Length: 224
Image (cartoon, rainbow, N blue to C red; front, side, top):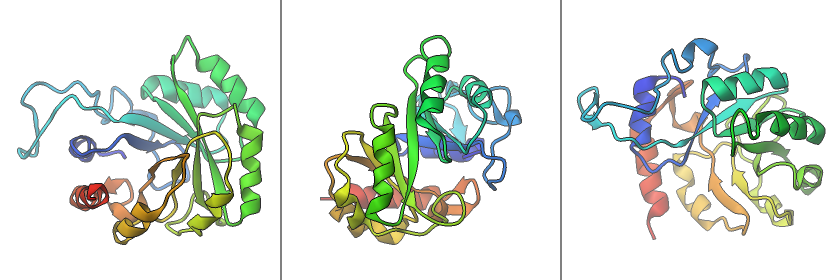
């Protein structure tokens, strides 16, 4: 997310978390000019404020997730502070030691209560073995599709692989989830799955989400 009107429109939906990508090679890269002094809303709109005269603004604030790929800890700390991040998502080869040091730096002085999410690329059951190194270190996993690039590239993996995951850390299901996946998402069951991650297949262009499509998708997911 980068566009303030797009962000505020999505805030009105039943969205729990919202992602901001700080990897410079991503077409959705958020630079420091987008921080509190820039275009990212401060989540304190005036009463009665509207987006394009149609969407009424409330004080609803999804948790902010900052996405990083093998970044330097000091860069992560700076962005946690400047963007008021609630969750740090690590999408590279970050080690448990690095994550532990990052948490010690952020908690409690800079961002009390900040959570850490580690992305795990999945193509087979063997890939889930990586999770054991991070048990007790991170707060969440994000299971994404294994591919040559960073992230799932809009592609799915075989979700039944996750039946082999027996860890205690809750996770998000990710990887190419789109508008046509309503029934598959509703059918997916795992005791540690707490939500799904959507991105490229709900975009009008990189960083600009289709609010109507997401709203329709959420309504369908919530139907009995």
